Image 1: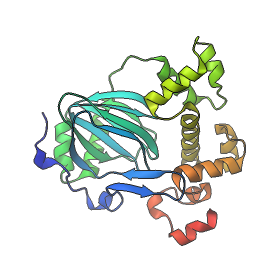
Image 2 (image 1 turned 90 degrees about the vertical axis):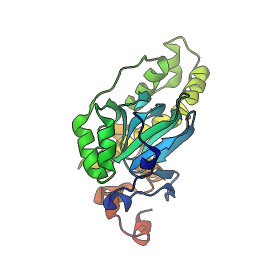
Image 3 (image 1 turned 135 degrees about the vertical axis):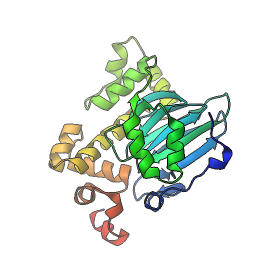
Image 4 (image 1 turned 180 degrees about the vertical axis):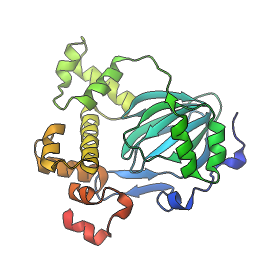
Length: 269
């Protein structure tokens, strides 16, 4: 059942609120990050949010209505009880369904390696818990997660998988093996993902490299070549443009809330 309108825009816990604010935040790099606040929000039907970027991870729990989301995890369609998990530096678009308002619960999410579509049995209980403690609600969400509903797949989904997985990808070759014209493939992919295949592949590759930088002790040069960058300089430029910070800063301080002041950041730019 939809929650009452009085539950909209619940105040987040002091810890999370100090880190995430409403609106957009410009990074020193190429991207502008959209920030969210924990709590319940009701959105109008047919609402369309163009592709946008987040520098913090969060979970979206659908309480009522329906929504389609397209992200690095692929194309997903959710109804009440479905959950979309976003790690840090996710990029996605959202399209609300046509029947009735969309009501969602947003929660902090710190497990960057666990993303995509899942389900929970009792989303309303999570919403009530989040009114007083979003962090605790996020922990309960993790305990309740179940596999999401499988949906029909099309070639555009296979293309997204190939772009994420293959560091040496050739669109023309991929299209021709399926009897498709490369230009038609590129147009259809842009229509679904709101980004061209080349850009999607670069962003996905950059995000993979960032994950290796903050979670492993491997050298930056090794990561650059394994993920598919031509050299360390190419990796550094892409990481800085995509995250707003250089690889050496990420390696020394993987938690962004421990970053130094802007003055000391400039030394690595």
